Image 1 (cartoon, helix red, strand yellow):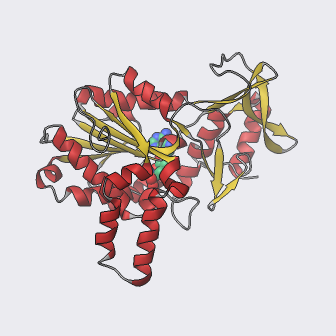
Image 2: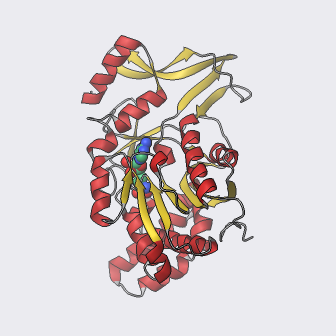
Image 3: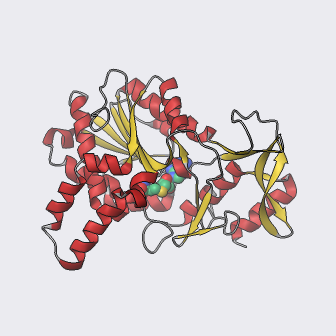
Amino acid sequence: MTALGEIIRGMIRDDGPMPLDRYMALCLGHPEHGYYVTRDPLGAKGDFTTSPEISQIFGELIGVWVAQVWEALGSPRRFALIELGPGRGTLMADMLRVLAKVEACAKAVEVHFVETSPTLRAEQQARVPKATWHHALASLPAQPSIIIANEFFDALPIRQFERKDGRVFERVIGLSGEALEVGLVPSAMELRMRGEGIFEDQSLRVAVAREMADQIATQGGAALVIDYGHVRTAFGDTLQAMHKHRYVPVTEQPGEADITSHVDFEALGRACVVEGAQVAGLMTQGDFLNAMGLEARTEVLSRTIEGEARTNLVAASERLAHPDQMGHLFKVMAVTSAGLAPPYPFGAR
Ligand code: SAH
């Protein structure tokens, strides 16, 4: 059992079974033993790899998208480029390299990071020294805003409810002897779903999506949310834990494994509309990257390198966009302030 596992066991002994959102929040964010607090989890040596860590082209194409939105906003003399959960800062560094080519845009941009992990803040600072850090969205500046969130919402805690034999239960973390175990406790939750099965309650994600949309609706701008998940609210258990690039049971290594779940884009989109923003579109990561010029950029870049590096570059692009890899499971949702036409490639077809 991990050190955090011991602590959680003590909490359950004292207070009874623990809802999954509390468990996830402790596993990822416990001030001493939390997963994101104690390490940089990204890359080959870590537990998982994200799109910006796979290829620089990912961030470059999003940089092109940002420059285009900035123009559509009327090329404001100052704007906030905000990233939620920026990891190592790689995506931002890749975007800024592209923005540097659009002089007025490069002059106008002010970088803001929303990040809770001190370890990852240090990584971000190493790659993007000129930035402002925030613990939450509440302190974001009053400026036209372009917000990017890649694999951020999947790390925000969820709860799970299950209808079984006509009754509703909450799925919780309890004890089986000395070990942590997922169990069921009766719940008064009213489920909208029909039939039996598991429903993932994303209230916390929805609350953050509303803050994001509020920033855009009141300041003007757009957001790009990229994550793995489903287009429509779906049912079933998608909670997963990853350690050293392998799936492990969610109860096995609290604080030592990454815990995430599929993002319910329908629920996030609805939340944005409630705040007065509009959902400009939702497409697969593959369609988005291809429309933004993935193939051409890969081709241009591959001419500058040879041998294994070239093979790796082509493979990386394929990994990002191929339907059997990240191209289909990952989705891209664009949110804009009222009055802004859906930025390319949304609404382009
Ligand atoms: N976007 C990066 C990293 C994804 S990992 C990439 O694509 O590589 C998730 C990121 O969200 C990490 O930076 C983590 O520290 C941050 N994070 C997780 N929960 C958070 C919270 N509640 N508030 C702010 N940041 C959070």
